Image 1 (cartoon, rainbow, N blue to C red):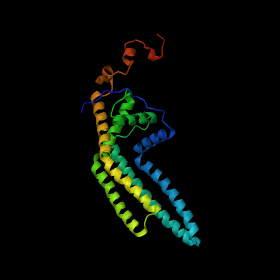
Image 2: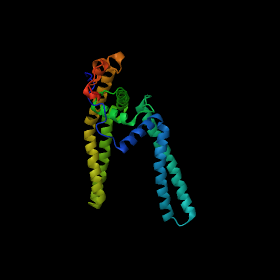
Image 3: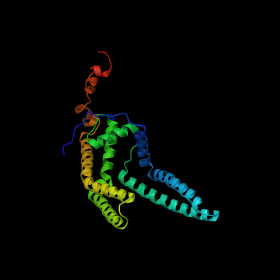
Image 4: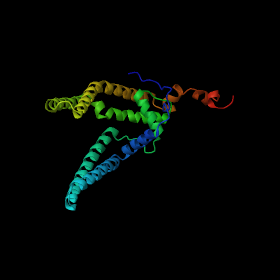
Length: 251
């Protein structure tokens, strides 16, 4: 693989939405405190579910004692589900991060730009963005689906097979219904995902490896010759004391 030099794409291709910035901030928080962040997110989600369950329990029970029993059982299940989901997610996050999390003070817009660089497999001109992209590329290569695309595809195919059996049984016993149509489309989606996942994962892996190789080869910083060899347009003229119209300064 020949490392590719930096490309003219140093910035996020379009103004990021508020949701994109919010997601980027949460990615940074999750990597720097995976367990606390996982417990916070799943705790809130499960709490909402438990409150909805409590409302339903009040509606179907005939006495306060039964309501308290349902509420207690639901609370125990909620706590167990929160612990299981949070610990599993935190462990997965730590595996992907691999001891190299994003800096806590990372600029979310730079992070979004770095994600675009990883998707394309090329460096930009901003050194900090390139450093973030290198971190993200390493994390991408540690993802389970990227490391074992065949296993992920086999799992999706297995789910599709189970759905096919259920759909066949449903059609034989109950005929066509709204539920069977919904199951058919979910079966179709899983089968399509199982078919397309390996090439998509291979493309993502190739781009991440290309960016990692480019960063390690051109190693940002004057000491490694990155600036001298691949200066951004107009940058070398500014270093030499020459001004260009692009600098925004009259000649």
